[in-house]
Length: 186
Image (cartoon, rainbow, N blue to C red):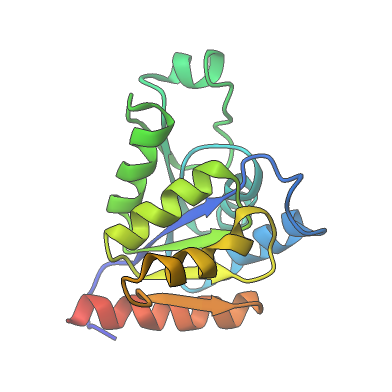
């Protein structure tokens, strides 16, 4: 690891509505947040509900630092128009870019992106992170659009990317952190 290097920033990408996710995804997401906090990672979310909120809660309640990037222009719009939560975040930045613009900003701000379950927004973030050549980690068998990611990479014919595929959350995070540090050291 690099000496005196600032904390790594891990973007959490996952389903805001968890109905397509595997059973127990809230507990899994919470434990992932807790584990990221124990590894001194800054957690970045889309300041939304579902999987990202549960990861944020796990990190926040276990002394991790959590930053949200909202699609809204202001606190008022975040609450009233988008109807998004403000809980479990130390800071929420209001991008004013809507969902797709926020997604790209979020991807660019992180050192790597962790994918847990997903719907169309997660798919959008997956392709953006792949295109940006970000270190990526996918919690295999978490549900939703996650089941298409390996096929998308294969059919894109652009190489394997920098992606860790793993079903065990702690092993996934440990390997992902190593991948991020290798990428930073290049």
